[in-house]
Amino acid sequence: MKPKRPKPSVQADVLEALKLRGAESTLMDCRLEFMDLEGTRRYVAAMEGQERVYPTMLPTQASGRWSTKEPPLVNFPSSIRDVVGPDSDEWALHWDWDSAEARLFIGYVGDQEDLTAIARGEDLHAKTAQLIFGRDNGPYRQAAKNLRFAVLQYGTNERAASTIRDIEKLGMTREQLYAKARQLLQSKPKYIAWKLKAWGEAIEEGVSRTFLGRKRRLFPTAREKQQWRERKVPGDAGKEGLNHRIQGAIADMMNETLIQICLHLYPGQARLLVNRHDGAEVGFPMSLKPEDVVPCVTPVIARYWEIEGRQVPITADGQVWWNGERRPVRFECPEVAESVAV
Image 1 (spheres, rainbow, N blue to C red):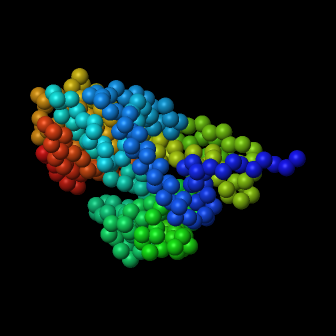
Image 2: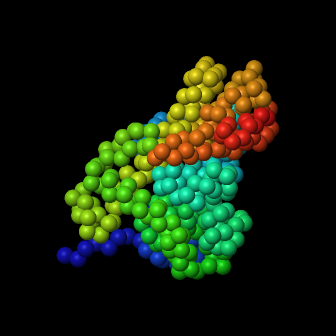
Image 3: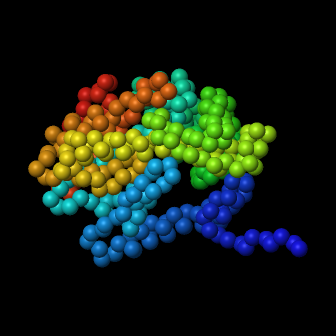
């Protein structure tokens, strides 16, 4: 009996899998872009006529990340996030941590060049773009950011770069992108060594912990163990173990930050509006003024975290949403810069 062939499909997961295998097609890229835009349209259409939303927010994911549904505010692209705002009798404080996952990787790995860069407040992705492409502006910075995420941090080899879109706009072919990915991997051997260690511990021990100590049990199959021991292929358990150390740690850090702000600094006054994993929005009553709140919460939002004995600074960009206006605010670690008031 002949094995059944999979039915043709244009679903995103199928097309992304084809790209991982090296398939190239302008039509396929357009289809993926269309699905992104269609997803945005559906988010907005579902809220038509509503004056208020009541999202469900629960830490339901295995990594500890929160899920936000009905509507999925976390999935809203930046172009439509302003359709939801604080009530008329309150103002909101928003922040996004700077390259949080990349900084955690640096802390775990101990790459001295990258540790020095973030300690100096340098733009990590612009620095990588200059190293790889010889340019650090707009699209090259974004491509470098994608390479760090897909290849250097989570990928098993340069082929992980196949998920990066729009490289044609940089005047590059897919093979040229793979060559850049190999160059990045070769320039950062400590990343490769640490990933192999993290994958191996997850598979052999069946456990992964964040740097704050939260444990996640893993259940590698016999086949996964064999593939790891013979070919150093991590499999699902290995990848989930590494992800837990990074994404799980971000979830731990955000939980601790929100607890400090909402329960310790401003109990009964601050309330969580949205948890965006590496960013959040918190509401405050109008009786509390931004110029008083921002300096108070800055040492909580921006601080040093100790990872593998290394002090890793986590800083943030933010905004104050006050009476329909949005004012920028910057959160720096108090040890190296003064708190920024609005």
